[in-house]
Length: 371
Image 1: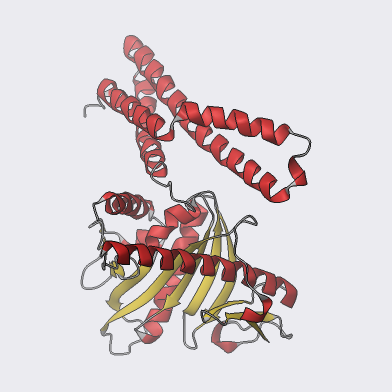
Image 2: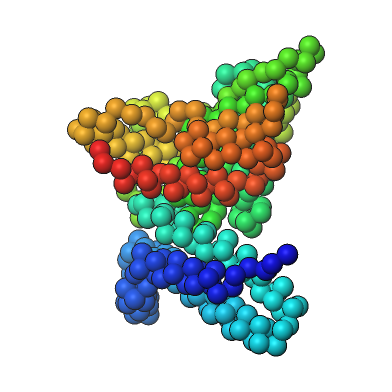
């Protein structure tokens, strides 16, 4: 079996990195890092804490981007040297090692190329994900739990931290709803393409006649806010309710009224948190979620207004966007990108990177299309 054409593939990787470098504007990035570094070194930086957080956060993000770019560029150069030496000496073991590294570099380059498409205002933020069961009864609740497991397994694969804020269990099985945060740079920009209605088709494990069931679950993704974000919520606009936390099947998991539900009266937005130990902690966490959802609502209203001005009446997000079919055949298909996988179990186990990257590319194409 013939090995890879190292010369042409390394040339292709180098050209792709050149394009990425232009998009990132590496030289401007270095200049901005130097400027921010001077600001961080200033003795009076923390006199203005909001600005200090903004400066240090921006510096950290840019340094991470530059490190990923330069590290990948160095790996491509090292591979070129390794291949040249191995071919001169006829070292088959080193050529096999080079082929493995070449495959890794293709994947890393594709991921970095997709990362350059995440240039939205909040794309670099961490993500707050809410999953709700829809039509389909107990199967829909079970599907909601399957989706939560899919995203948490994806986070584990990438070594991202997940913080669960609230889980509302259905009576028979599964979840009515769940809210959790994914703590990682660009988690929002990456996961935001998952927002919408997901559809599952399978033989229901809850139907004693073994009939096929279609069920739905909704996924909402909003960015986690920073202290510098301007979201002011007057105290009189929020109703606070406290109640006892509960586990699966309504079982009480806390003997005190520590769970908190916040209702934003002007918009009707409701959030809850029951996973912290104290009522005070749950209220603070619930307020974080409420602010994030109100910011997303504000942005959605602004976009809707702009779409109205443009005459754009298409609602591409929030509609059915992916099918998971387990019977009569096995397939996961994204209805926007047309990407398919014949291994739904792997997808439901968190192998969703291909769908995320295709979604990000699709969204960029949709945004670039003329109005």
